[in-house]
Length: 175
View 1 (spheres, rainbow, N blue to C red):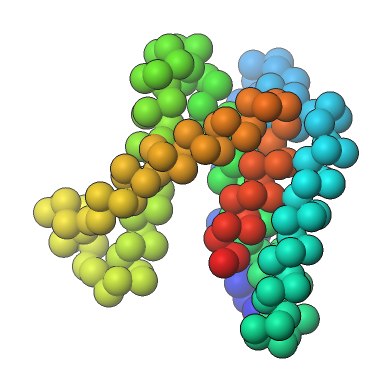
View 2 (view 1 turned 45 degrees about the vertical axis):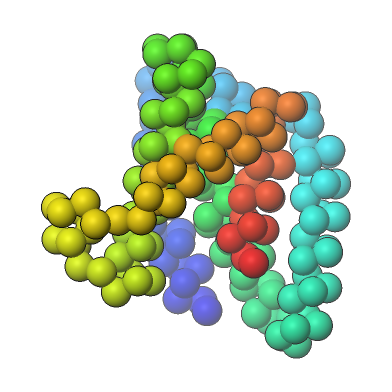
């Protein structure tokens, strides 16, 4: 379990540092990627309620609090927060400014779905050649990415705080 947390940190750190360097270079505030005080209490409250309901279900079915803590850390921080920060906090608003709301949202969703293709390779025992070169990937990866991106964008735009979509994303991935 600790290996996966370390792996998550190693995988996420370059992207986070890249975003922070771009913000610094452009003299933009961290609030431009959805990290802001406004909406934080609400996001934590709703996220905690969702997490509590999933936790009760998880402990009843699996009985392992240690596994619950691990999954919470991994999926909410290293998956949910990281992906939401990159795709909804950083990429989506910039694509919308450059390409318009509809096209920016679709392209952001396509990138989000495409980023999940390696999981299709790993979990479905596909080869890189079959998946990437021949395009033998699940349409759910790309199309689902656009649909899920719309849901997370909707949640994000309700209070312009990246925490609530991060909680929802991480909790959905925990299931």
